[in-house]
Image (cartoon, rainbow, N blue to C red; front, side, top):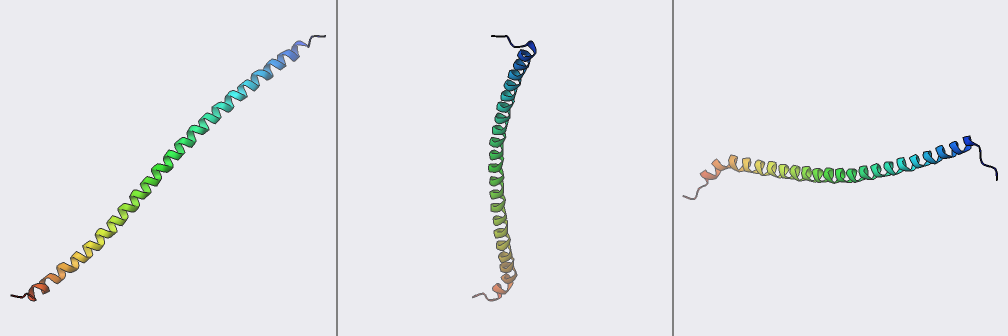
Length: 87
């Protein structure tokens, strides 16, 4: 059997190195992609929690405002209530 030319052997070795490099880069890419997905999920959870906190805060502020309005009404009517005393 005839030995292949040296240039073919060099080409074959370079091709093997390129394939190994491609596999290494693919694994690195997949690992980074996986890490980014984990980070993205964590950020989604944080955003969801913050949105829920904001919603609760707004509901509380609205309730306080309603209570304040009713209290102002009670205070306005307080002098007239004194005039209706049973004494």
